[in-house]
Amino acid sequence: METRLLRALRRHALTRTLSSAERRYLAELGRVIGYLPGTYVFHESQPRRAFGIILKGSLELRRGQRGRPAVLAVLGPGDSYGEGSLLDDYPHSASAYATGPLEALEIPR
Image 1: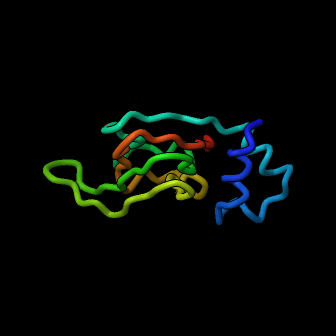
Image 2: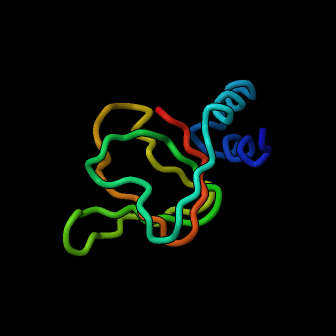
């Protein structure tokens, strides 16, 4: 198991209070996913499928499917996305766009 995954889970606000065994379980359950610059991690109104912690790179959270989307936030290493997938079955309220090469630990719901 990769030390960097455990480190990311130990540092993140939502997972830092978990036991070491629970963080190891999440690291084993999760997978590291790479996204090319200019690709979408997910689209607004799609079903939520995973919780992710950014390991490298950055992404923009965007809202508005047509025309020019509004940038709601820019996330970088240590930040997370898809937290709502841990809580409910609602679709994404925004899109996530990789602004450069992106690597994230994604844990399926």
